[in-house]
Image (cartoon, rainbow, N blue to C red; front, side, top):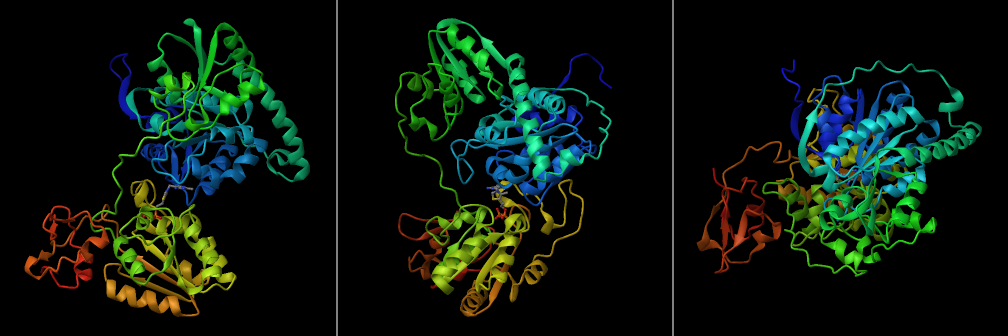
Length: 575
Ligand SMILES: Cc1ncc(C[n+]2csc(CCOP(=O)(O)OP(=O)(O)O)c2C)c(N)n1
């Protein structure tokens, strides 16, 4: 029981604050597939016993499960990164037609600047395409307040509501007030075939309703407190949204600002009114000219960023440049080059694939780092699941020299269908599943092949080798990726056969199993300075000024990949 009237506070990120707000709103169900910068939304929610939370196998599944729960009467939430929403586009588009029952909030986190993604798309455009209301918080505190509003809007207008975060909002932290949870009984579910069965006639009629709903939502946008006007000097005014608002405030504290917290549908009248009240109007937004185009369509005279600023993250110091009409100056990246961890089980696989000179169709996970020199042995990466489907496409053009590579989490996400397709369409060759028993890239989340739920409870475990066999693989081998000789022999053999083969290279990620072997002994007298040990790109080995090498025993996990590539036996396994 609280002893005084001061609310409790917690230091939360935007993702966590949003999750806390959803929890306080009586959220009963949440589904997601991990993806930076949205992962922490579900991780935070999973701690609450009274929220049914799940890692789904992929975003389409997550979206449908969460929407289904909302239609069944539970306040429900979906969360993913921007590219995750691409996977869920099919149900997203039609969910605008069916509407919801209990509130349904679709949280999407964009990644301007591409810190950890395969592209830089702007999800606000999707809200327009899907005809769904869009909320854009600018801070963790707003993320919390806005999600509460989003549930109310969802139920008032019978629609999914999208909340768009960006990396800076999702990952910034601030002190957030914590309040008790609303206790909400589930909403009654009524069978309603015209509303929930989207056959052509029903869908046509629902489309009419959707257009009427948009008109009502636009009227709402005109009066909602989610959109705010700060009138200060009239010489300069900004229309902005999301984190760009904070940048505008930092650089132009005396300017007038119209901040669109509810940025679609567009509050036309309010914008015209604001435009009339300032002498020079600017629109400041990250990535696409989403607001800019709408303002121009309304015939409003506005200055906007040079198209070069559509690429990459906005930064406060860019705003005066935009105001002056300048182009963006590209700065050389000083970012540290990413590298596989010492002892990463993926290292041995790419060492072997480089040796056999395979063309490797890759996928998205830690193993994508196999593309970087000196490993340089992954040659395509477009989207999740592509490691297998590109293997099929590449094989059709290049024959037996192609190897497809995919991680365990990604295989479950969208690799299984590709394998079925390859088998069904009579493709032969080698696919490798790099099974480190976790979703390492996004911070070690469990998935069906780990046999553990998001809440850490044991569950039915998906056996990958069984899945591969029933999908149509002729050979399925499970190997230790640290035994390079054995792996190389098997890879060469399977690449030559007229069979569809899967090799599962299985060894747990170092971040989930931190056990280690002693670092190898380095016998400098035997070293021929060939530096082949550096070709495995391990952070525990470095070249010294005199051309020898140095092993950092604090980093080394004793995986002995370097030992196996050393022709002079200067690196020797201990024990
Ligand atoms: C459509 C989509 N959803 C989510 C992500 C975020 N993401 C990137 S890789 C990955 C899975 C990595 O797990 P796994 O394939 O097992 O490889 P590991 O990192 O463990 O080596 C995820 C979830 C993404 N890039 N695209």
